[in-house]
Length: 300
Image 1 (cartoon, rainbow, N blue to C red):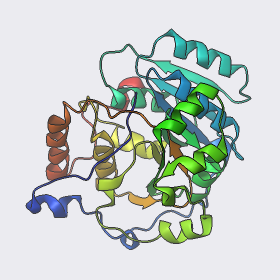
Image 2 (tube, rainbow, N blue to C red):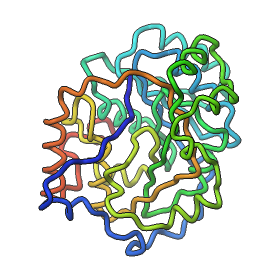
Image 3 (cartoon, one colour):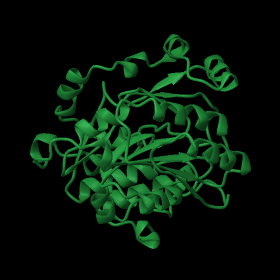
């Protein structure tokens, strides 16, 4: 299953300035005033947890604003997931696309790039398949989209007993979700406060990006060649992408208090490759890299 938890980067003191994003007031984002849902591709990553994906897709259909399409990037799930997606295709009034690759270990960066390549919307919202979305999730991302910027959001955590109940029932129970949450402050949906939060400058925001809740213009992903697929195993691929986007001159904003997501509980993924990934991330920082050496352009 995909894990979206991101820990702080632990870098030598001499390198701290290299991961510090300039104050957002130093950037001039474009004049685009939000997007339409029909401009947005929702990319969902999944791996062998059809029960969670079932709940996630329920929450997609409950959106107040639907995206143009939903693209499910599948990192090698078995036939149960394929069958589930085929069943959901009949319920969707927008395209539901299944992009699958063989299970060759944790290759999240690769399947996300393949999903991006299939996306036809000019703006991409990226989530994981173990999330339940607030009904205003897509509408919020559409409202906060600005050229010259990309965004990262926050999440609340559903506790283990409630997760088990939701999976067994196969349906969203809003009351149960809200009663079970940890990090409840991340579940606050206060769009006006979200606007204030959006324009507050933060140092080192790239250390806290959440791959389970990010959004970018596709043209900006093309500029940096998407995810760096030399990152395999869990960890740091999202930070690497964020740093390269910032190196390309984009501003990183937070959409806290909007674009709310609820994360179903699961055990943490194997982190055996984390040291190697941290080493590659340090190289991205030190070299101020922009383009991924092995990335999105393979699938265009």
